[in-house]
Image (cartoon, rainbow, N blue to C red; front, side, top):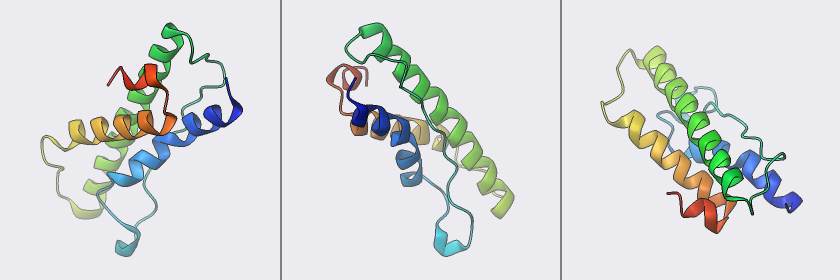
Length: 109
């Protein structure tokens, strides 16, 4: 796999999550939580490895979005809207997949 693709896939989720954060730096709250998704061990020309990367991205998005909802609760004492978590996960995964720019991965969306 191209070294730049490995780097992009490792950072893609962090970028995606910042787009769906409840809070902003203007509110004086720490940066959005992030997770690094490792792809150095995957060959993105292999369908099985592409599926593995997708599962890793999804799991990381679930964790990050849950952390963000908890952070929002701690700072506002308001619960996130019911559909927010699902929307956060979907947007984070979609953005990360597009950042990786692998056609096989995009096909999983």
